[in-house]
Length: 132
Image (cartoon, rainbow, N blue to C red; front, side, top):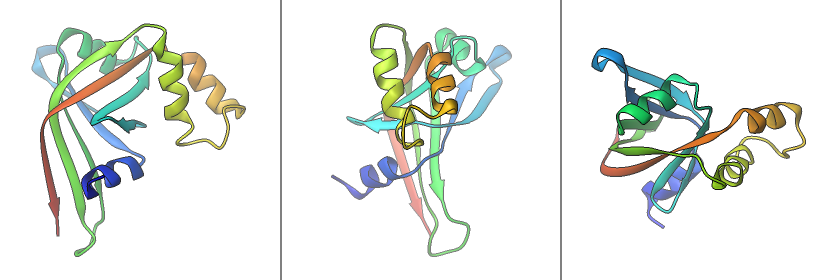
């Protein structure tokens, strides 16, 4: 596994940029799962990011750390996204939530799982990384 893949698997917050009304960017920090070179983000179909992806699958996202050199590192992705709306949603959502909660028995985890009715799947087409 590359150092970039290890980094993307270890971090906890991804900033997802979608294209909204009037071509206005919409950026949201999200929890995610990085697996098989794709990003998976659990959400609800009523969220702005899900509505944007449904209308326009072009996205960009960024995962980064650090504020002082030499510990600044990041990865930016440009790619395409689609909504997963089938029976895989809860299975993927559980994997995402287990990155952030010790158990799905946690009340917040249960509420988030109940509210998740779609997964945004991001397929990278271009990746850029930086370190300082």
